[in-house]
Length: 260
Length: 106
Image 1 (cartoon, each protein chain N blue to C red):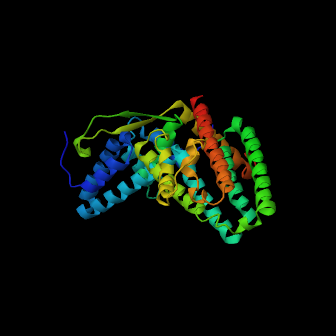
Image 2 (image 1 turned 90 degrees about the vertical axis):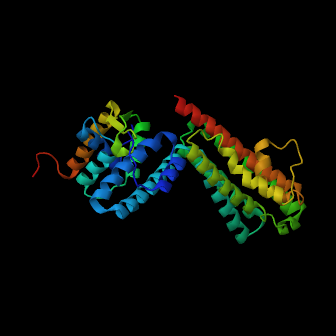
Image 3 (image 1 turned 90 degrees about the horizontal axis):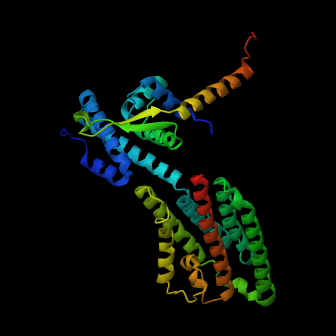
């Protein structure tokens, strides 16, 4: 039934590799049909050019659809990027209480994400949790920094944190690619978001020490600060634990919403 | 029901026009002819996929053909939800136009 054509083999392999399984055959068939028609009408070289253009376009649109379907990996990238950027900005602007710009920024991203996902049952609970967390953290930070340890402002607090943010962004991008390519549930892809951050922490010679640290928090902690001041590590444990908790809860709520 | 986008409306209307045999290539050709601009297959696939997710269209596979290197066509059919969404879009559009050009007024 099949007939040999000169359509670009490399483009075909890329499509086979990058498109979801159920889209590969119809897409290759449509492109083949167009290729033969273009080759007769405008010549072989033109048909090859059009084939490549359409193939790249199909891959791009498929990736966009993958992102639309897998919003949580997108969230992982967005929060990693935004968090990293906010941390850089705050490190440039000031030390000390400016850290709350970044914390508030990260929490804002999580909150906006939940609103966008229309996770209403969780919204009031989230606001309560966020409010408690921010109040406790601000009080604790001010107490430690301004009363007990004024010199703590000089600690290069953000040195490793923004790198971890960057690593999370890279990991988030990797998790999106995996989720898009496999077109599967995001659960297998999400842990990939934490791998670069974990590797970075490992490379700078830091090892998780406490069994009490929640599993998710271990992967995203700015371990580099562990040796300096325990309360900073404690704050970050709190921050990332809350974020991981919110992500997991958001995922569950999303599952329920779609199950209806 | 979330309102349809312009391109989603165009794709659904193309499915109606093409009757029983709309698939990627002829849907794209129909849209290019009617809208008078170049449209990529990727954009058509994305929109069809979105409509499929909203259950406004359904799919079935045809027989493999030599013109397609032995690959089957994926045919699309508009469903009741798609027709209802088009009807809603038409009513909404008419109501908007009636603001500027009310019926019976000169």
